[in-house]
Image (cartoon, rainbow over all chains, first blue to last red; front, side, top):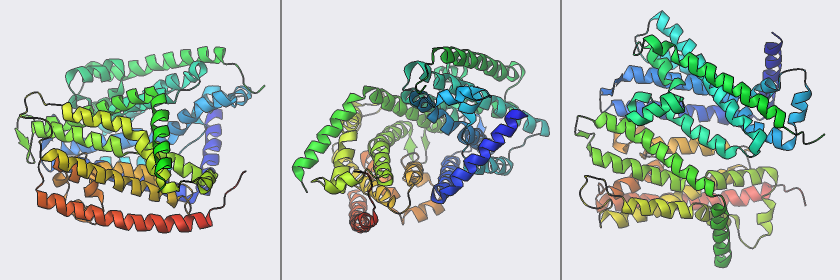
Length: 257
Length: 265
């Protein structure tokens, strides 16, 4: 409850800051509109040529696109700015102040800023999911929401691992660039890729679990042990992230004090 | 134009780019990931059909590679980002004192920044031969048409980016326009998907913008799918847009610098 109240206060502060720069705010909205319409036109154009791409029909692909907006919107709202600014807090010594606060330094480092334009994408994601015309049961809808949340948690844990590298190597922008490029692979259903790449996305860098697996589970394309895999991956990544973070705290030498 | 200054800035830009070798690895990786993402969906769609929307499998491969080359070479994230920040944060003042005007500086900087990766990718395209495709990647007639349109695309994108930077004199934050332009350009220019596949309504409004020139023009030239008449017609359109943009850049530059309040010493 304490953390929820704190997050709401931080969110309020971020919203006020962003609304101060109106051109930036409306520009951010314009950007989201361009992104959504580009992806929409992309899939519409492909399905104007074929009825099915691999195992994916148009409504399913549109549902996948809606799920991509959902997970990516949460990434944009909660994590994007925080993960980018974290190495700077280490370099400049601002992290010293995070350590002095009576709350978790990890919480304050990863949830300090929010990006409100991403909320537009969240609403668009639900709108497009309904409009996609995909046949999904109420249980399927619950599975979708739950596993998208699991996928997002996995993404969060992996980002914490990458951001924590700042404790050792200070300059992590290249690593974050690399991470983002690999994350991009998850923007398409995993089974459209060649087999070896599909395996990489399932077992090495689990980008398939961000969006693709939750959608396939919700649509009934996967069953059995597949319901367990995303949870195991997320638990393992969460454990490693907390380990790396704690090790990082031990090697951190304050810069300003 | 101060040619000597132009050469110096270009050379410095190339050298500073070469300092960050990791960027080359990342560009390569980013291009490979784009190839994987784009070819996967297109090749899966064409699988078992032989052709899709007038494209054979080998044509789609070539399409993906040329599209990615064009987007990588024309995308000026870094230089444009620097320019916008300099206008916002006051760093722009140095260009008012230097013996080289800002558009010249920008072009030299952009040219130098992407010179090595452009040469690398163009060399790769020329050397690439699809394993079961007939003939070289670019035919003898397609190669000069591609190179001409490729130069045209670069000039047009430099001009568009320059207007974005000048736009920061009025609206502080124009980074979003840059990102929106890059995302929109990929789809609406016909460099992510063949232009003819776009919905009819989309193609109609794109015809009133320079988007088609930024992707479809060089790509179809390279694939040998464009008659000389059409190539010339689009080339004429490109010249017209370049003239309009030059005028706009001149007007925006004059008005922007007049309202610019530099600070710092």
